[in-house]
Image 1 (cartoon, rainbow, N blue to C red):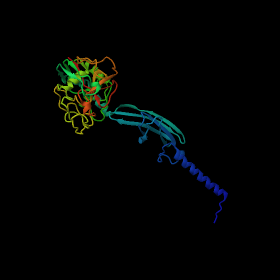
Image 2: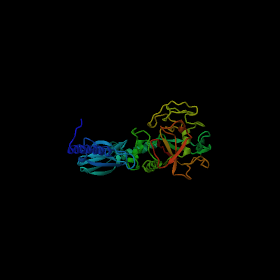
Image 3: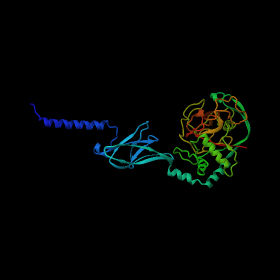
Image 4: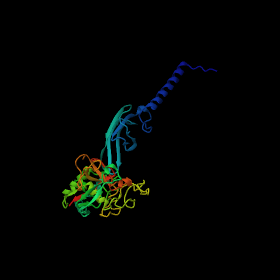
Length: 384
């Protein structure tokens, strides 16, 4: 049986089907993320394309989280909104820093607009409160504390470097070191924050959420350390002779009389004696597969024979010396080598992240003076 439709009816039916297909295609092909709760039809909405700097930030519309701006260059977060006024915002908190930016957008139906947001960054309220709590009086106490924590290292000579180590630890050579003072501990966040509070230091380093206080300051560059030392040398009650230790001073103090050994503790060191990642075998040292995964408060482990804590591990320590590959032509009197390549400086001691090899007294690395990370801090010395 055949059913014959009138031409008018057939035309209407085909037209309706065509319109439905077009609408479905438009929705499927549209690059705009359409939130169904906002609009009942495409024509009722306005399209908003959002970018942010920095990229990859959470996007909030009228206080509600809607997604993230793309990390890719040129990427846009697209959304459809009902006509009217909307607050479009990007905001994120990481550690002690918060970043945010916002704009009021007026949306019209069936129109498209672009919103480019630049986030301004600053301290969270809690971090600002901690910073403000350190007063000038507190800074003076910190200076007194620093003076009291200096340890006098006796003059002496030692064999610097390692005959079975890396190429930049050679040749092994005799160095005569004058008596000098060095900090009993690494510089702490408490001490650094005192410098920031009184305007002596401009950088407020992140603590990665691990805490501040007596933990070693980290995320500080060689240039940052110099700023701290300059402040310390101008404070009332200071000896005005603070500086970073030279490489020779550092290795002499780290060995603490342990001749020919990898560590001040002997041929091996354990996670009961230092903060490091004990995950791989080194020479005759059997790993415990234990790690702390972050910094620990200074003085958490026993001091070496000179009375110094955390010379191995916790954070790498900046020295005064410029970077160089090996010891050929370097001073034999314990002074710093600053002849060339001073855009990079030498780090010593290893960190919470590193393994046994990196904790050796002879181990040395260098990075550019503006470099910083959660692995890097410092301690200072003082001429006598």
